[in-house]
Image (tube, rainbow, N blue to C red):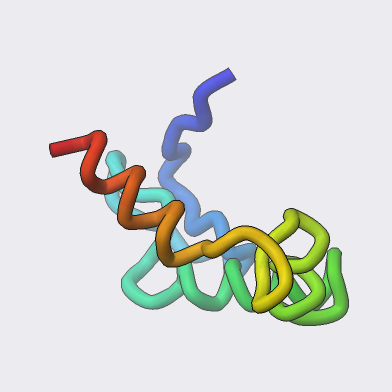
Length: 71
């Protein structure tokens, strides 16, 4: 199921957004930080849970490869 904007900011603040927006400006970062902390205990723990980090997969490389595919 593909998520669709519903006119409310998805960070949980409850403020209205544009019809095509999931978040108010900057609130996507709030949601990312909150998710990492609430579900994993922090960003390092989230990365490790998905196999990334100094001893795991290279997240920057995976990101760059994904962007190269989109071009």
